[in-house]
Picture 1 (cartoon, rainbow, N blue to C red):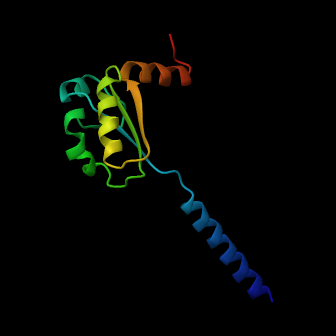
Picture 2 (cartoon, rainbow, N blue to C red):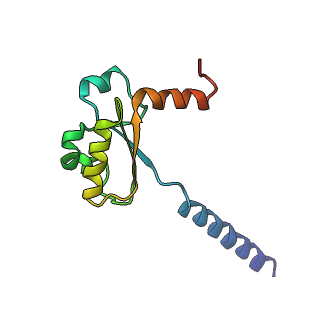
Length: 116
């Protein structure tokens, strides 16, 4: 009887671990659509650099999942808007134009309590 209880606890623990793994958050892919020169001057940590005019050809090196979370930014929001339209036309469903790099940095600082 004790052995059966131990086996049941082990199975329950395994089940909970597997459930936990299945509900992990999907990664968010940040993409800087500015030029490589602009990207080198500063970018969001972990962001990939794919200029807006080649994003249709290059997005597959980041993800082929049409439901992936993709966040685009540039200097002002104009080029990321163009990239957004391109990705939507390609069937990507979870794309967001986050706007300009400077405003994103200010939001991050404000969230961390570092705003000046």
